[in-house]
Figure 1: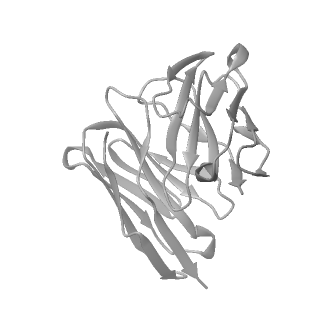
Figure 2 (figure 1 turned 180 degrees about the vertical axis):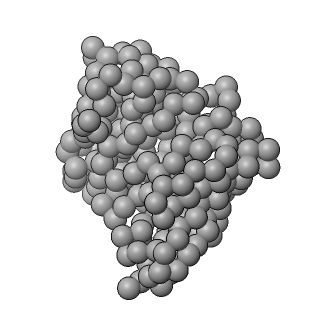
Amino acid sequence: GIQVEQSPPDLILQEGANSTLRCNFSDSVNNLQWFHQNPWGQLINLFYIPSGTKQNGRLSATTVATERYSLLYISSSQTTDSGVYFCAVARSNDYKLSFGAGTTVTVRA
Amino acid sequence: EAGVAQSPRYKIIEKRQSVAFWCNPISGHATLYWYQQILGQGPKLLIQFQNNGVVDDSQLPKDRFSAERLKGVDSTLKIQPAKLEDSAVYLCASSSTGSAKNIQYFGAGTRLSVL
């Protein structure tokens, strides 16, 4: 199956700091989603971004499909940004989302 | 718009017992997924339904796991008998189409502990 690698595995930030999370994938995809899993386990959709750049408030994401990676940017981090961030992808001829292992973000006040 | 509903939120059982989880997808979503998330890992797909038919259950341990989606709306996932390694969060997701471009929306999950 398609391999998804996320880095770094863990990230500790001071409130107000900026950060970049990376997702590398091993095959062509036409579905890429970023999720935030909050401390209660809920997976929240952040972006559907198989290519291009999107922004939503303090979060933005860029996917370079030809080079098989995506980046999630968090600016001016807040304690509520803490949690695990997952990247998930699906191939062009498939429907299954394959998830990375996630990046655990801890934002300290 | 209501999200994906799951129940119960938590379940503790002993090994060899049986357990069932329920999921109600977003209204109008034809495709429903069950994922298993073991602590420290990303979710892994167990089964996908398109309306009331199974599209893919290749990762479902069929000797102990079963799932159904009667009438193409609600779904139940059952484990019988449970093993210690089944301790995980079981997530239900839905999407409006079954194509690879679909956006999947997740429920809050059911956290299962097998003792």
